[in-house]
Image 1 (cartoon, helix red, strand yellow):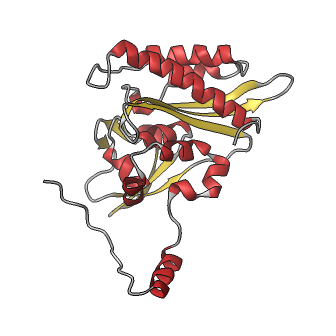
Image 2 (spheres, rainbow, N blue to C red):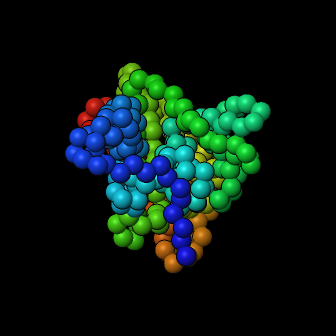
Image 3 (tube, helix red, strand yellow):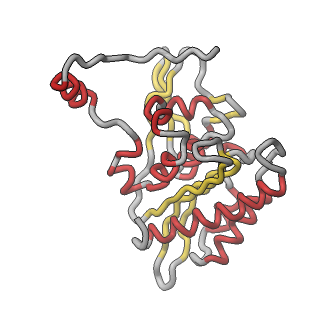
Length: 242
């Protein structure tokens, strides 16, 4: 038997009351945030492929990260953008890089009596980002997925000055493809570079064979999805794609 979590519930008694409640609570859906979409489109990409609208509207970003499911989408996106988690407890507040937040499947650094209360993301001009996912059916957990964020140096030719790559459902430590990130720094922003980064990401992750597919298939997906995400991130950094 599944028991729903406790929520604050308000029952509108009229149309006017419903409008008042809406005005008081405000729009808090991640997918609806124009500010987030402007700076990190990767989150809008990821939100669109998480479950369905009903599930998304009941969930929270913090709850998703704290669940620490290896197939969870947002962890890879936050890892790619190098976010920082703010954790509050009886002894005060501490900050933890999101790349150190997950310590294993369904485990985080949040201790008993503590709460994840904020997530901070560094905003730097010129970023482009994207999320690519393969799932067995719409709204399912990932078979594999890749998040990418990129900054370009355009003088004299476009090169990758910095990149972040997050992977989901393929056993990447802390959801990160660190070796692929390291390779990309200073490389030309070309399909060949992105394909090579994808191969490196595939070689260094640790997918497990399960009902969603064998290991070789998942590695193939990592290589392809990483290259796709990097390509879309580059196009967005260059203003060629919304």
